[in-house]
Every structure is written in structure tokens, then in C-alpha cells.
Image 1: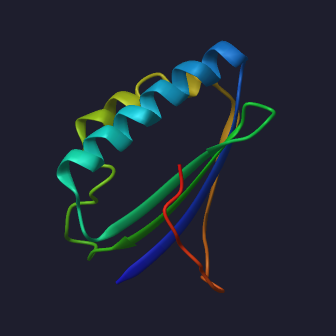
Image 2: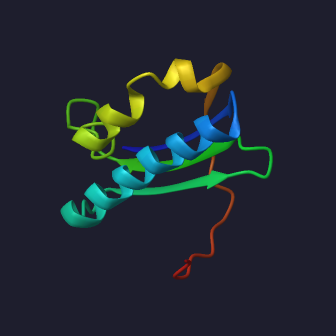
Length: 104
């Protein structure tokens, strides 16, 4: 089952965005170590210090989510509402096309 999610949210300040970024980087470090084969994940920090997460999951509803099940993701979620300005907009998405290469 392929799930595609796009999540957007704003941050209260540049300092909150810096902390958010550090926590997101921790999630990527843990994913790089575990190398799950059933997920793709990209996070963008926009010029206004808001964030956009795009994730592709290929696991069943009864299986662990390789992103959300990491300790780093639990740390990322701690106090997330305090770092954010407003709510989280999360929507499912339909893939129209993709061209993927190594990006840094």
C-alpha cells in the first residue's frame, strides 16, 4: 500500500526553526543508519522558516511506519506545538511524476 503525504507548518521564530531543523536532521540520521527500503522522505525548510515534509510510504496499516517509529521522530514531535505557529496541514497526495537523482 503506497501512501503519499505532504505536511506543512510554520514556525514561531528563526530559533524555533533552527531547533526544528536539528530534530529533523536527527530523523534523517536514524533513517540513514536503519536504511528502511519501504519509505522515501524529503523535508524542505522554506525561506520564511516554515517546513514542508513529503513522504512516500509502502507499508501496510498494520506495519510499523519506518519514520514515525524512530526514537528521533519521537524527539522531533516533543514540544512541536510550542515551536510551531498555528496548526499542521497534512494532506494525502497523488504522484503525477518523479525524476529522482542524488541531491545534497
